Every structure is written in C-alpha cells, then in structure tokens.
Image (cartoon, rainbow, N blue to C red; front, top):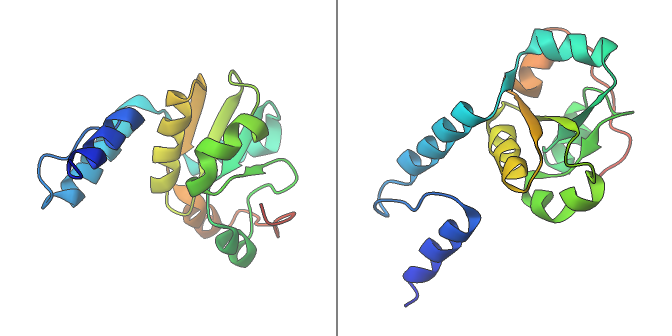
Length: 151
C-alpha cells in the first residue's frame, strides 16, 4: 500500500509517474522536455527589452531567499518573489490575476520552467519562462539590484 502513495501523489499533481525507481534523472528530464514544449521561453535580450519598456507583466522570482539576498534581483521594485517550494501556496494570494502575463525566473531557467508549468496547471493563462536564467542576466552585464525584502 505504501508504494502506491507516491504514484497517487504524482498523478494528483499532474506529473507522469516514473517507470522505475532507478530512473529518476530520466523522469525529471521528461518533465523538463514536456514543460519546454508547453511553456514559451523568453531570452535575455527579450527580457531586457521588456524590463526597460513594458510594465504590463509580472516578473516572478522563484529562487530561494538566500539566493536573492546574496545575488540580487533583476527588478526588485516590481517583481514578485515566491520561492519554488511555496509557489502553490502563495501564488493565489500574491498573483491574484490569473490572466496576467507572468515571466518566471530562477538562477538557470530550470526551476522556473517547472514553476511556470505549475502555474499554468493552476489556471494561469499567460505564463512564460526566462529560459536563460538570472546567471545569464548577470553575465550579459545587465543591472542587478539588492532585493526589496526577503519573501
């Protein structure tokens, strides 16, 4: 009975069940591939243009609070910070408009990809992933600011 519970939890979350317990890396990669095919990506150049000119989207940082504190943020005055592990619990309150354009980012674009897919499954209709990630933003020489406060 206890072996059935993880599969039921995966099914309830809408994630595919693993084929065998020995293949977790392949399972995660299949989740990533599925998410890449469903979630539009945003490049560093496109995000820079949007941050500079388009104020009609929500920038969602799903990094851990320690990452934000040590590395900074892209646009702390307008972005929403919800650590990935709290997304399902905090998004309904912090992101009440399910029709808003939301661009999700993390350090490398991987957690944000899965977070964007989760938001879509929660009913958000215009979710995108900053696929290059915060590291690429910094490497491109774009400004980084101290975060406003820890989430």
